[in-house]
Length: 185
Image (cartoon, rainbow, N blue to C red; front, top):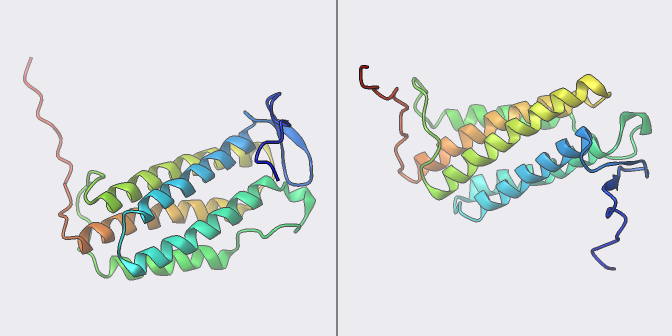
């Protein structure tokens, strides 16, 4: 099977079920941002040796495929694909709570960065937030699975805490944001 089909050369793509939409459609933009976040998770995984975190992130990558399938299938098509479920969001919450138990409470804003894996997770978090913003806009225009929005919201929190955890386990101190001093005029 060839990787190219030429069916998208005119600027359209297919949703699950065959509906053709523009590649710049909000649903496709949201899907693309979910895919970008998943790719960023792959970059993070390539830099994180911690087996526990690797296992969690690998599971999340699979769930992000589910988010993509969910978004690529309008709700009117019914349950023809796996949809994001509340149980997956709850699992993210449980992991956030467990990971935070290993960390000092956050009392200040921190700058994204740290170890290569931690920095990559901060980037994935920012991409996840963009996907969530696109999804919020999409939900105002079309019916979506509301759990997908909750999942992405919780995932961005999870990625923030995971970045902190990876940096903590790597012995990298967090850099606290301090307002820069501006010279008086």
